[in-house]
Image (cartoon, rainbow, N blue to C red; front, top):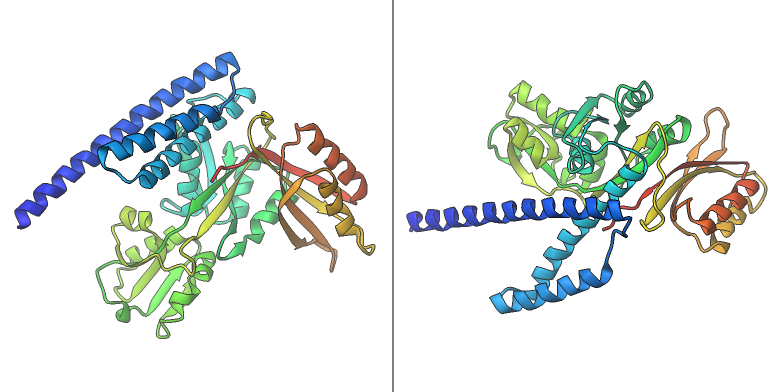
Length: 379
């Protein structure tokens, strides 16, 4: 029976390899389509063609005995990835970014960190080599960008469990950088150790404070464990490997366990299963985004202390039919009990209605800073 099971698994492995090769071939054709569209200045999305494709997929799934919903869901993901690639290619082309060259990206952490994965995910399809350089702090990663040691930085700005990441808000608000992109990454936290060990034997757990905050329900069930903050999830994984102590564990992603040869004790330990981190991509110069691309614009605004001043500013967005996706406040440096407001809106500053709305908003607010207009990541 074991031999038969091994044989079936070998066949599954071969089929998986074939699927991946086919997806790689498809992606090569997507690149060719993208290049042709750029030359002919054609639109990125053809919604009619996409619906025709999905209709064919549903029919073919039924024909071969596969669940139609499963097949449609899979191909919607494939289409989303295709549109994403073409969107980034168009932005790079229109902003004279060289396709296929080396790109250098700073991030907070080390190899195997979620930020490292986000950098690879955001840039690897468009550039031949992504040189991702890890730093101990968010500020150091941003400083590397401003000192021209890298071309971009990638910084986490909010998490669906832990909330906003204030250090990043302070950087994009106070430093001379421009947000040119975003990346949304699903986060699956795992508890890992140097050897397979029972959970009851763990006495010390290391991880980044954000990861710890996202796993409080799981950690509350381990009263005999000392939970300690560390510089980064992947750094905590590397630390317990170096210590070699079987009573220690780290919270990080499964990719970090693979990278450092650690054993996953528990998987998916975050408070929420649907745990996502949104990253922003700062650069030294802003980008222009074609109006055919769904865009997001990030702003930093300071209002007066007069009664109703904030709501009056927000009503300007409403009057111009601008949808606000997020509103965040941060204390202003050396100005007790005064706040900067950070806003994300759906819209492109190249769009006339959005531009008019922001012009009116700038006249009403005491200060308005456009942090960047950039392609909105489609979910």
